[in-house]
Image (cartoon, rainbow, N blue to C red; front, side, top):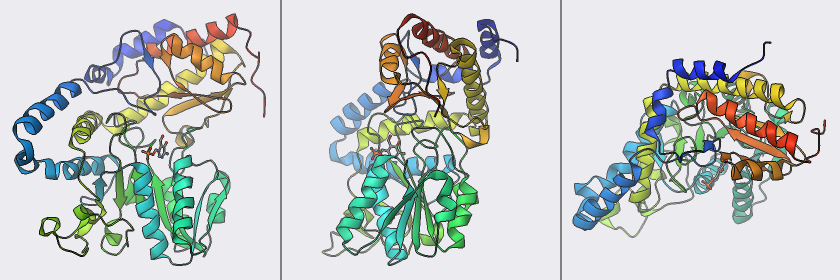
Length: 406
Ligand SMILES: Cc1ncc(COP(=O)(O)O)c(C=O)c1O
């Protein structure tokens, strides 16, 4: 393979069909942002949009804005946009609460739908997914089990005692991606439900929940959807389960007639039942802006650029840093999401120095340097400049010379 030069990456920028999307974001000058898989940057104009809602709709409209400004239906319209991004049927996605709370709702529903059976998940799943499962089981007090296995053995571990298989589609630490259709089919073969956490997938990789036959899903609004810090999350319930899944959180906005203020809960029809309480309008305003930007570019174009950028990043690291960094993300394109990770014994110190010099990725203990690839605002020359900085730092500082092989 011939060596890459900065000019090669400049040429790719000139012909990049997504290059214009960068103008849709407000990114600080001098920063190369490789952490959009943790917190996406603000869409251009979002601060003014929030200010308008605060001043006009809240300030002038006051309580009238629940109806006059469409506040009551805002979460539904965002949910329909997110549904299109994840291949969900219309009316099967709800927006609100956090990913953690949505996990609680859906796991609670799944355990009730498959009584007496266990939750199966991956040891290296994102902690909140596992903590929520533990807390739910403790709360139910009926001896449910949470079984954790290695990613490679998930399919084999699904058995007739499994109520729900709960997995994060793209692993937060390594960037490894499951074959959604294959694992979903394996769960269904044992009459288990599947619950996908799409936090690292939505807006980054093509997802088709309906085609895969998935039952349940959740996901974050603040990563590749650029919905702002703590943005409301989303959940998906397959249409065939919508009226039968017994959800454990029964808030008034999930009631069949919330403004009748009845003394007893009656579930609304369809996905509305999954809503909980008063929607956070200022946060939803930011999320709406982020989802609109994410919806502007075809996901196939985003995926093509993401895969090419990761390939180039790996090639540049190997070219410029020798074997100092060990690749952790799978090499096969179809097995990874939109981030690239390397291990190094001094990863924490290296990342701190990178961030201090304007290349923002993140460190995941004990030894992982994690770089999120968000093709909507990341240029090809950004990759060159980031790797040049990493290589210079590795040469100039007394870091452990070589990543341990393990
Ligand atoms: C896979 C995954 N699930 C859930 C969360 C966070 O959930 P919450 O929005 O409740 O903080 C994250 C956050 O990084 C995540 O990576």
